[in-house]
Each structure stands twice: as structure tokens, then as C-alpha cells.
Length: 125
Image (tube, rainbow, N blue to C red):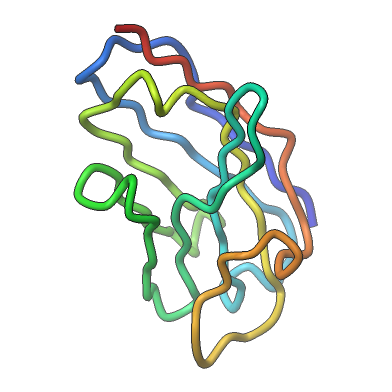
């Protein structure tokens, strides 16, 4: 499985960006995909996730501003980011969990099996 993120860039505060995470492999439709981010000098943190039923989960710091969605036909997960703030500046990573989840959506790094290389999002004030 390979994951490739795209869509990062420089945006002013209050603006929007849409990140994409494209995946290879036949198990995408039954996988959970998560977005994490790592700001300079800080640990990587869970941002949002979506499971095979399209159940979603968000960290409190992005609720109401970010929306995760998936298109299984395109093997792609999107992260729509609105009302961006300078503190959203980070490298954003997508990750894929092959386990067919029937309960809580995973939010910890160790629960994910594959990772993309990351895409940088910079929000200027």
C-alpha cells in the first residue's frame, strides 16, 4: 500500500485548503484513513479520521472547521480545511489502518499501518 498526499501550500488566515490522500491497494474500501499533523518542534497529533462506513471523528481543535470524506472509487480521502488559523501550520500526514474496525475509530499513531510522506500547510497571519 502506498499513500500520497497533495494539496498543501501557503494560505492566509481564514482561508481554505483541501488535502487529498491517494492510496494504492485493493483493501482501501475496508480501511480506516486518518489525517495527522506535526507542527515544528511538536509531536504528531491526530486530526481527523474516517472508517469504512464513513463514520468520522475529529480532534476538538478542528471540529467545525475541517471535514474529512472519502471516495472509494478513486481510492482517495479528502480533508477540507476551512477557517484556517496560523496554528494549523504543520506537515499533514495521511495514514491507513487495514483493520476492519467495528468500534471506535483509531486515533493513535501505532494503530495505523501505512503512512504518506506528508504535505506542508502554512497559514500566514
